[in-house]
Image (cartoon, rainbow, N blue to C red; front, side, top):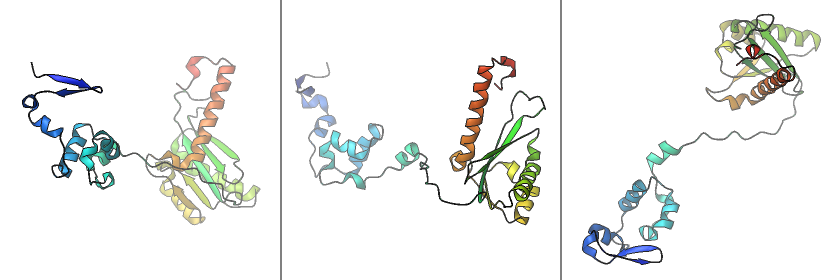
Length: 227
């Protein structure tokens, strides 16, 4: 037998202090006996809870102590999360002052022309989208040149800013030289941060949803699906 306890208000209190040992003295906390180390000790024992929550569990530990002044480096390492990307209101601009772009692929199944990739160009002002199919990622620079020439000749305007992810296909020397020659600013997102190129990423999702819906409607055989 470890000891004798008495139930009171849903808690059990030991009748014999000798059975409690050091734990019996912890139940009687006084302001002078509590240090910051005691607060951190219980913080570690309980799985690093919030210090405000810990104060509600053990008010006696925080007599004359402010929970906001306690900091745990381990909590910062174990619980940190990526900052959110709030939506920004649309700022008035002009057509092709900003163009969003992204490359999708490769598809497991080639289409009838043998292409496995597609690239989108979306005008930020009108949200009109152009989609180009291609066979190899090395064709991205050539496709952008053709798109730029079409915009310049047919619409009598120029592209001022190109916003993409940080894919290597956008950073080929040939494309970089072309952008610099034509005075086009290239904005790229950070690594593993597709939210910064959200317009193009959302367009990819829309295109794939439409394609899947059409394939379901026409009962396309499974071996023709991308997988």
